[in-house]
Image 1 (tube, rainbow, N blue to C red):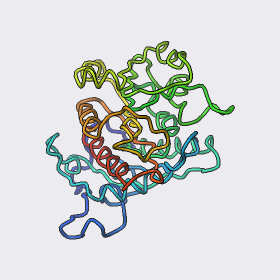
Image 2 (spheres, one colour):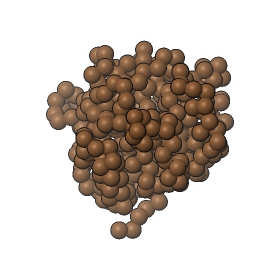
Image 3 (cartoon, helix red, strand yellow):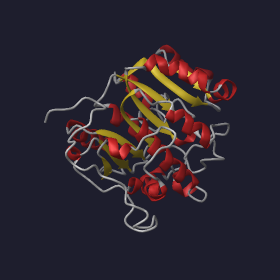
Image 4 (tube, rainbow, N blue to C red):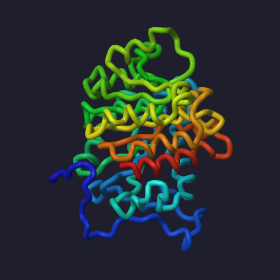
Length: 316
């Protein structure tokens, strides 16, 4: 099948999938899908595939992100199609639908990576871009295999460049390091936003420095605000970039439902503004990870994640 370039629209003669009309079917009714879109498991019919990856075998502290996609789907029922800030309806512009969940192996991280890589490769070969909902952050490595080397915009409290845990080279704290080692990322085009909190040693930041990562810590953002981020985003203009958003970049006061909460993070308003600032970049794909519903309060983390998922779709 002939592939289109990222950002182009296909099959204009077809009617684009639309969210269920809440004035006909109330939001609490029906089967849960991302943003109440139809379930379309055929990537060749889509421009953007919303995909669940319910895997948390890479979590090293609090488990539960395997339930993230299901709860984000439920909370996304409140999403409406028109974005008044970005002035667009993404569902009119592109064919977007809930592709469903990928097959994973809850007992094997290596087999899960192979499965995810193969299934996402099929989606990408069909010409659709992917927006994935995890799951823990270890899924990032598999998602990149089709695109590399690319730039990376990482919203995260942690840099995810650790060497491994308990003898395993893979966990939710290692995917950025592994992606660099496998040649999937361009180090000078990695931008990490929101890093904060304690680490094991001063040397934990050496890997990023060695490879030229650019970093905006939470403390730097709280002092300098959006101008710092915007100046760095200009360096990524026209480069293919992948966006990964770990929900723990948000302060646990706003997103308690996550596996490794870290105080001092962004508010819900700030993370919305940061995601919207990505508009105009050449985004080849993105993911939203580490939502752990068992630790949530009143589903506020899943609700925020659902809104961020919508904003990610809009900036694509």
